[in-house]
Length: 233
Image 1 (cartoon, rainbow, N blue to C red):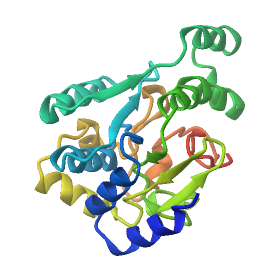
Image 2 (image 1 turned 120 degrees about the vertical axis):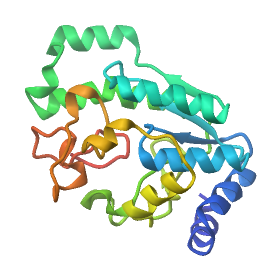
Image 3 (image 1 turned 135 degrees about the vertical axis):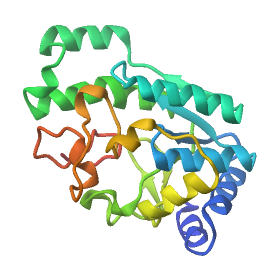
Image 4 (image 1 turned 180 degrees about the vertical axis):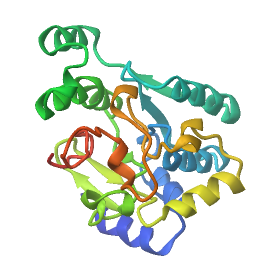
């Protein structure tokens, strides 16, 4: 935790790319970006690749993703020619989950949905972050009420690492502008009303004026988090 204040202060006075480089130099070989291949993550991937910044990129394949997400992963690795490590859920854990709760049991209760997210996302994330000192995310403060008060950097006690949110103060129009200005590949579902894209059974397009997270777990009245970022649901 000794660098917490230093990183926060640096984040407040430097650009996103400068912040990524600063942290990568501070913890060489131990900084990892978790990419859901969302628009924010694509911005960070573009910066990391073009700036040759020493940040490892990984994504989680839950086994229930949209075809368009896999297509984007292929386009991204072809465009930047950098590895994106893919982590999968444990097959035995998935089999046990389906046996106990059903193939689409997540629709039946929040507990079932959280159990599915735990097996398909939280457990693989733990493996992906093993040995890391810094976890970089694409979180923005205005994505949901749960994220308004997040700092640029925080200490994740459970995982024993720094969690860095370099795009925290970016607005959605700024993200879109960056994507178009730099011709960054993005998920074509965004052009069809999908804002926050996760697993196919759990994501829908949103209507104009709806909250950006309304399309995630749309049948619930929860806080719209999967457990990756430690927010109570």
